[in-house]
Image 1 (cartoon, rainbow, N blue to C red):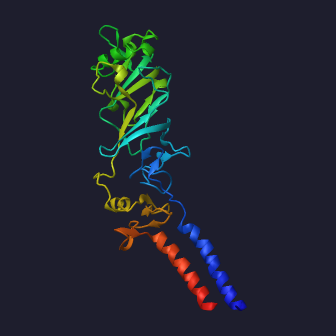
Image 2: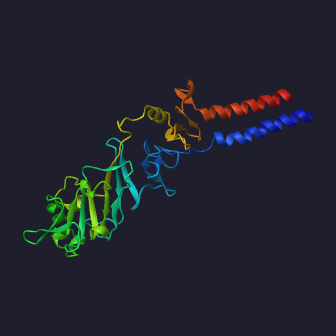
Image 3: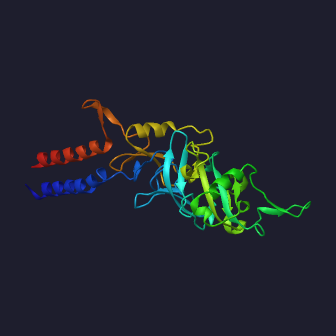
Length: 302
């Protein structure tokens, strides 16, 4: 073997070493985060899912899916992809089993979420003398809450919980807020409202009179777009075992992230069906091609 042939073999060996790790690297966008399945419009990091959702929903290095707002970072406990609702847990929120002081909860004004229609917020231990949710009645100088008039039952049941009853709070210091009452900024600033804590309920599990069986947490609904149509390109990508994402460049165009780390503009299928109906994937074709070409050159020049 002369020096020229040796140089050519060395060159193609370097090409193989350079490109093969790229072709076999792990998938950038994951389809799970911990035990939660991840589907469009959500993603596990930059370039994954829908770019409108990425600043707010992400997967931590500890494999915990979280929602970030200007009031804090919250664990996403479940996602119902059929009804397009996510449920989050606020560690500062009070429930029937424990009470905690809380700064409140708020959504960013531009976040692609809205409170689910089933949501009920109960503000707890509000000052009847200084809270803005109370105001004077000019006729009899009494105070009354500017809250949902149908919320007295909720407050009464919450006050029956051991954790809350131990505080000996008057039922008049409890105020039931519905999402519309939070205003256009979806802000619940408990310090400003002069309330010590809050409780949030999104379901009753058929136990309307038993607060211990209620579903505590915050339910948020989302839409794919203004028509709420699931993108066809994303459906094709997910059927091919890919994860929907976007180009991190200025245009944020659609990409399908395939196992092996390869991004395509369509899906992860490639070539004709083979081996009992399965299909070759681009990264497997690429790796095989590099191997074949390298050994062909070696055999020709030896």
